[in-house]
Image (cartoon, one colour):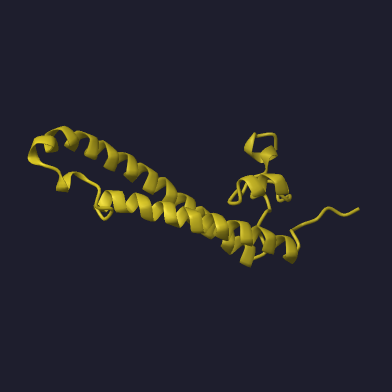
Length: 125
């Protein structure tokens, strides 16, 4: 029996729906982190009395740094998901970039932007 070279159009549409769902959540999370950084959430030290300002500035800076890190990670994740959507359009989604074999569906459901099979990722190629 010949080994499959790519996922069927129906399977690709299943992965597309999964990726779109994850993309929507990732974009919402990114927007939340950006609002913390940009003060658009309205819950910062701007509206507290000067007495508490000194005490809260340190926490605010730390919070912004953490939000910045999370925002950067979310942005990177969004880019990976968008690239996965492009691979679906090109019908190359789910093909390991090192082995050329199909990545297991279970792996793609867990990590829909994966470009390496577990075999390749673990260096067993």
